[in-house]
Length: 189
Image (cartoon, rainbow, N blue to C red):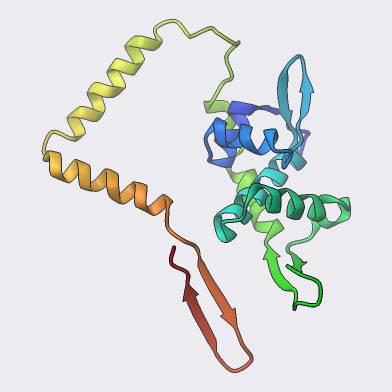
């Protein structure tokens, strides 16, 4: 595959996150894209690093410090990036049993490759400039969306919005694998 270099908005479209969420990963030093003329440029490794951080954040609910530490440890040695999966061991305190975290690098890299065409759908515009006719396009999209909601009541719309928001706040499921049995535990906040 040829060398890919994407701007922040294009990279966020490929990763399936908002530009702000990707910008936060950069700001906290979890992802380190090249910076040229005050513009972040993401290459293949930067995209994979961000995808791994987002995977760990979603599956563990980890803090930014923990994400930075795990991601840095994983990408310390470039030869690890070619593997299909990598297992991280984390020992919360000295003397404790380590916690194993398996990261499916191969499938995350494949997902990035499959979503690369989305970068072309999100052109990055020069700062402070909007395309001609952007207001009309926005109005057309709002009118089209309102047509889809014609047969829905206010209560149904509110219920759908609340359901979607609560999905984002769901606590990840934690699986405990034993020798004889497999038990799944869900943590509650």
